[in-house]
Length: 339
Ligand code: SF4
Image 1 (spheres, protein in one colour):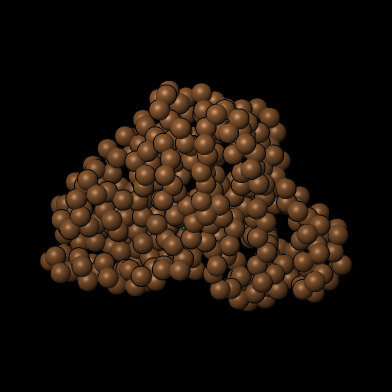
Image 2 (cartoon, protein in one colour):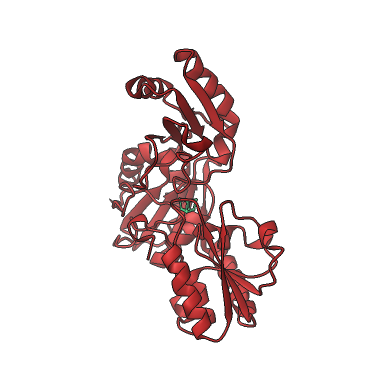
């Protein structure tokens, strides 16, 4: 397997520190890049004056919804946040976003994905990707065109052209295409695209160097979600989970759901957490939970929880106000996150 490098833009970071005359700088890496954190911190340290303090945030970080600007008692002058782009959140101190662009080859998996299109009527392909590969979007478009297809991409709400997040699929919702290729790792984003568009979706995985169809994963996840919803129909009490992470907090939604649950004759409590994990729920005698924080938790972490963890849309199915045929993935679009 080839070595994957990420562009951490050290010189840009050093220039930003100088521009802001920042003395206390905290570096925030997602879990998958934390192994590079000490090396990156050392490099910045060597290139900045001795009165500049570089810290590494060791807490878990999964997205730009979770910024370290308020940490260390407000002593930070700058957050350098790697691998995600801004969600437009207000922050207590300046935040510099570094995409951490990946050097992984996108051509081989993309060609593999195109070779999986068997329907001769397919004329137009939509392409989407994540922050680490977005710098290759023009190349992706050209590769698809060279294979004889039309290509469409679109920007989304707070996302760049062709970019999707695990909680924001706005860039694909209005794409009039026959097939969608997702360039990235993991299946979650492709699952969301499939749920929103119902079109064939193929994952072109730059880290594996190959492509795969999403249909089997899609069917398996839908079966699991159906089972969780069915189990939750026996629940008499619900915990509505909110997160105090700035970009995940949907307090008004939690209040609305609590009212809804009570109107249907069940008990409901709102539980506030920062980092959400199964052990935090152990003390509570509640039958099922509704996740208003990161939408990935209910789907991706499902196996870690004994009791059903539902999305707000799944709760609506449990309460009989949405049908299974109208199943939708949850999203957090920052400009309406308080709704
Ligand atoms: S809420 Fe979840 S999917 Fe959205 S940016 Fe945060 S970690 Fe990613």
